[in-house]
Each structure stands twice: as C-alpha cells, then as structure tokens.
Length: 424
Length: 121
Ligand SMILES: Cc1cc2nc3c(=O)[nH]c(=O)nc-3n(C[C@H](O)[C@H](O)[C@H](O)COP(=O)(O)OP(=O)(O)OC[C@H]3O[C@@H](n4cnc5c(N)ncnc54)[C@H](O)[C@@H]3O)c2cc1C
Ligand code: SF4
Image (cartoon, rainbow over all chains, first blue to last red; front, side):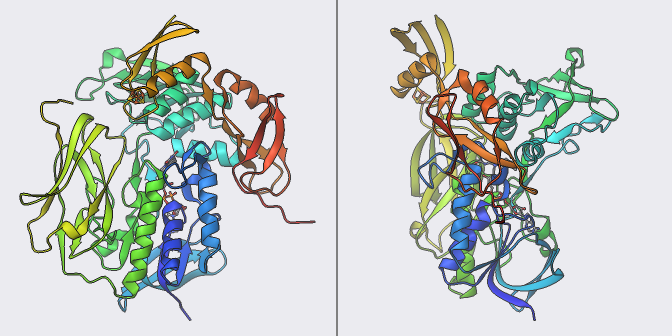
C-alpha cells in the first residue's frame, strides 16, 4: 500500500529541515526525502563560520548549524528517507502522487497532501557563461571544489585561478591557500565584487590574493589537463578587449559565477516562475501558483544568509501543514508590484484577506547609500522605512503587517527610492 | 606608518586610514565609533577564526570539519594548520567535542564541528 503523509518535504538542507520541524509541530504527518545519505544539504561542506548569528545568536560553522536542525528533526516523528530522489509528481485527489527512487526500495510512490519544495540551488557552470576552448579536466565550480576538499579530502589543483567573486569563490580562495595551493587571482567581470566585503577582506586581503575587477577568462588552454587560461579586461559593455589578453598558467579553474534555484521538477505542472529570481512565484504563505505546493530556501530565491533560509522553511512547513487542514481561505490572490531600485521582492503575490506579520525579502538593483523603502496601496502608505547602505549582494528583510492591506483595494506597490536630496 | 583598511564591523564598509604609531594611532574615514575599535585591533593584532578539516580512519567520511576554540592571531594561522594536519580521528564524536588540546602551547584547543559515528567493536 502506498504510504500517505499530510506533508512531504523534498530536500533536507536547512530549508527542508526547518519545514519538516514546523509541519510536524503543527500536527501534520511528515516525510522528509533527501537524495544524499545525510541531512544538512550544502551546509555539510560549508565548514567556515558565520552561520546562525540571527537564528542562534552565535557564530556557527555550516555543519554545526545543520546539526542543530538535524537534532530537532530527529526529536520529532518525521520519517526521513535518505538516498531518495524525487523523480516525478502528479496531482491526485487534491494532493500529489510522488514517484521516488532509492537503493533499498527501487522505484516507489508516496501520497502527499501538500508538498514543500526545498531542493536548494545549483551552480552556474562554464557552459552557461560561454567559455570557449577545450574541455580539459581541472575546471570546477566553487561548490564542487568545496565538496572535494572539505568532504572528500582531495585537492582540485595546485595553481588555481578563480573566475567570479561570489562568496563561495572567495571562501574557496582562502581554503585552497590554507591547504597549500597557490591562488593566482580572482577575476570578476563586473565593476563591483559580488561577494561580501567581509569575505574580500578575510579571504583575499589576509592572504594577499589579488582581485581584478572588469576582467574575465576568455580562453581555456590544455587538452587532457588544464594548462592555463587567457584573461582579458572588459569594456563598459562587458566585451573583452583583445589587446589586453594575458595568459596565466594554472592547473585549476574555479568558477564562482552564480547560483540558480533548482526547480526543474515543477515544469510539468506549469508552476508560474519569476524570471528574475528563477524560483516560483509565491504568496505570503510561500505557496506557489499550484495549490498545495510550497517553496522555500534557495529553491525559492538565492539567499545569502542561512538564517533566512531556515525562516522561510519554517513558514512553508507550517503553511503546508495547515493546507492539509484546509485552514487557509483564499479570497483573492493579487500581485505585489515593485518600483524604483528593486531587483526583486519575495513574496511576489499576496493572498487576501490576511492577518499577521510576514517577512518581505528584497534585493536592490544597484548599491544605494541612503534609501527609503515604501509599501503603498493607492495613496495609502502601509510601511515606510529608511534604510542605509544597500547592496545587491546583501538581501534585506522587512516585516509587513498584512492586516493593513485592504483586500478589495488597489494593487500594492513596494518601492525603494533615494532619500530626498541625497544621492547614492 | 600609513595604512588603508576596510572596516567590516558593519555592511557599510568604510575605508579607514590608519596612521601614527602603536601607542597613539590616528584613525580616520570611519563613519562611527566602532570603526576606531576595529581599526586599532586590525593594526595591532588582527584575530581570525580558523576552520579546516582533519583526516579520519572512517571508511565513508574521510574528513571531519574542525575549528579552534577561539580566534587566534592571523599570522599564526599557517603554524596552526601544520599541527592540525597531523591530527587523525578514529572515534565517534559530535560538534563541540575537543579533538586535541593546547595546540602550539597556546591554550587553544581543536573542536569538532561535525558528527562522526563508528560502530562499536
Ligand atoms: C556551494 C555553496 C556554498 C554556499 N556557501 C554558503 C555560505 O558560506 N554561507 C551561507 O550563508 N550560504 C551559503 N550558501 C547558500 C546556501 O545554499 C544556503 O545558505 C542554504 O544552505 C540553502 O539551504 P537550502 O535548504 O535551501 O538548500 P541546500 O542546502 O542546497 O539543500 C537542498 C537539499 O535538497 C536535496 N535535493 C535536491 N533535489 C532533490 C530531489 N529531487 N530529491 C531529493 N532531494 C533533493 C539536496 O541533496 C540537498 O540536500 C552556499 C550555497 C552553495 C551552493
Ligand atoms: S566605521 Fe562604523 S559605519 Fe563604517 S563600516 Fe565600520 S562600523 Fe560601519
């Protein structure tokens, strides 16, 4: 007979762990499915510290943060299926028929009243950034290199070049150096580093690793093993200036060029996606356009703080548990529009009427010194807050009181503007 | 002495200019008082946490993540790496367990940050 659960959570990273805990605490029967053997998701390989300052008021390493949540899951009646991969999902009787595969049971199905998608994100690769040349070994994403060194104990190379200044790349620059590799430099196509200032200082400056902006890798050399790369300065339109080409010898190229939420599995159900976040469009309950499917963590949008990932997991788990009990009454689902210096805001929709306070997460499009965030419905101001030193690389969080939003009113607009007379 | 450093005590990231000598450092460029404190510490003795991994004898999980029990001077990090790389774990442990004591006679211990489980017997 097919196992049935009120809530099935896919992915046991910090988002899925928090979702499983929250759904169980709301009285739902919960199944947590994870394709790897252990819980923890990407945190298992993030051995550096800086996690949990908001959630636990402590500076933890990734594995320590994951371990705390893992224990919370184990203390609850949650069925954990390890080495279990979700392959397909079909709507059935108001819930979902899920097809899984694992080494013990082979292919099997499970019935879920509601679903929490917490599959995390994947890294962009050399193919997605159009690197030309051969495909020798020695080219890794930063996350692959992190997995090799921190979990398996292998060195990906000895003379490394890092392309992209994302946080994982910066952290790997330090990690490789500590393990005895020579990091030739970090090259970033943009005019601003994409990682946190803290990481620029503590991962690069501490170890005298050069960071070169407005520079990219244009060619790969070597046939079996990487032998070198050509780097070029770029012009304002990010077009390489060929006359600046320089060859750098290296046996390892590490790509830290961005993360993409993992959501392929939602495609057959035509779940509405946000072209900017690359995650699904959700309302304040983190429910997607497909009733009963909730999304959280990096599958929803790429987060830079794990504390926020857990928060979203908690919310999705709780709401998924209530969905089974049909306690969420939909009246009207409206769009939350954005204006001004906003790259994106999540949730993108609001289901009204609603009570309570929910977090609104957003990133600015450009860096801004003194800004003011305003949420308006027509001419009525629902929230207004001055914010300083905003950067696209740092996500912001604002609590919004949903009871202030008129369910029959106009479309609310969330905007970020310069504060009067001050320019960024 | 004259040095530029970036304050990382908050996301603003002021560019601090530090001049003068150890006893009376002059720090400028800071938007708030925290920058003074940060700049002084960074110039006199920058402290950092070290996190890394050690070898294990476990058949599946061949590395165990670890950290130091407190922040140590940045310049001593390579020496700490050397002694930590000698450590090999062959027992069950959970985050917080002390895996080696008094590294480099500095009263700093090595702490497990991950879990490792060995079957008994
Ligand atoms: C390489 C890398 C390094 C990072 N470093 C940091 C950092 O230093 N600090 C920081 O704050 N954030 C970091 N992040 C961001 C980090 O991903 C988030 O902070 C947080 O770990 C995301 O949690 P999550 O639960 O959404 O995803 P994940 O931790 O990625 O967990 C997703 C889980 O879902 C599982 N899964 C996926 N698809 C399926 C399927 N079909 N069936 C079953 N299981 C599935 C995966 O195996 C995984 O365990 C990093 C991200 C990456 C990719
Ligand atoms: S000096 Fe103050 S405002 Fe400037 S970065 Fe440091 S803490 Fe922030």
